[in-house]
Image (cartoon, rainbow, N blue to C red; front, side, top):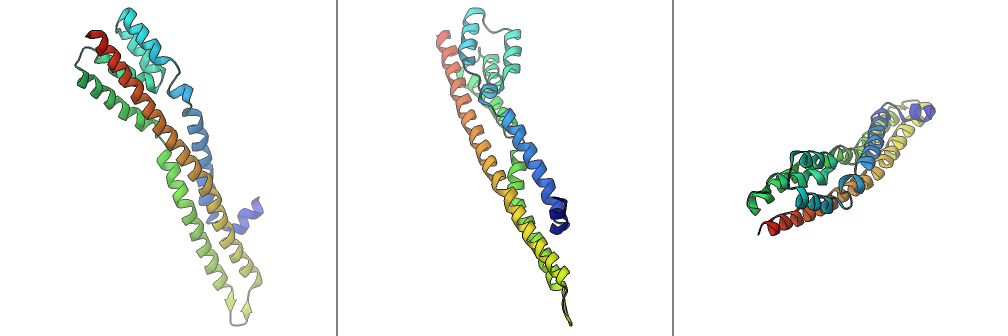
Length: 201
């Protein structure tokens, strides 16, 4: 492995760092963006049941807010349960934007790595080409320098693509998951609004 890094030249160090960051972000997002953690099954039913039995209390709101991102959105709605429907919906939308921002955390970084890695690999290729041209002299080519230049060009181009492909796949996968979670949270929050205002009528 160290021999490959040596053959790839100094541009490979950026790609190695990018790969470590990408793997760490993929693992972190895979752990965080689980359905059971973001949109727990049956949470809305529990909230509605508690609301009808004991109303809205500080303890209920605090527990709900700490429960999950969906709980944060529902708690924001319940805080405005006495307000008109548009005000309650607006409170939910405001909290929903904050939750969406939290769910998208690190995705920009992952997307940036996916976009930049092939470009840095191309830069490494250019460095290798410069090395190749530098190996030429009036008496002929320096075989060792020529081989080193080819190694730099190929290793960096290949490694840049190797990083970009999975980073792009996971970036799109996580972004799709976030979008589906946001839609589901919005639907459940609107159901809560309908239930609260239906009970008040």
